[in-house]
Amino acid sequence: YTSGVPHGAFAEPDEFLAQVGDAAALGCGSGAPWLFDQRILDALPNLKFIHKIGAGTNWFDVEALTRRGVLLANNAGLNAMSVADHLVMLMLLCLRSAFNPIFRLRNGEWVFVPPEQIVEVEDATVGIVGFGSIGSQVAQRVLAFGDVNVLAHQRRPLDSSATRGRVRQVTLDELLRRSDVVVLCVPLTRDTDKLIGGRQLALMKPGSIL
Image (cartoon, rainbow, N blue to C red):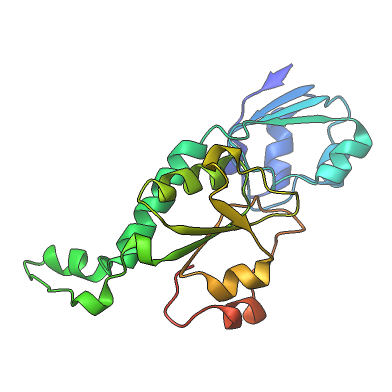
């Protein structure tokens, strides 16, 4: 039996469990404000497989699923191109100090942005934290602007073949110190939760963009 109930609509886990019953497979679209943990698994003894639409799996206690032998599948990389486009769009808006003029223009007010408030992409150092499917796509787009200095940080050795060796791998602290723009492209896990805190923000340049 497969349940396609939109669990994100359930504020409480008991509501969710009442709908899915004795499901052996679940199709999930989005997370809920509670964790899919051991308690939920104990109430679903027949569960063997979960398909989570999208890339994120932070709603699930993956260790509990592994112990039970429940397979969790997601669509890693499915939205990489779209997210990369969105990140670069936001980066450009920030570098050109464009948000305030856009908002004020809606009210009929033209705002001149002084040149000193505009940073050209080629003059910026872009730091990418997490160089997986999204991070590598961001790097390719940023490097298309020219001779941009791109730094990357991840736990594994960097595979920069897609960017022809133009991306340099550094520690997270060095990336934060040197970057004008820091882009976070890591999944939300126990290792990355609270990755950026007070100490990390203090390392960043005044006026830099996160």
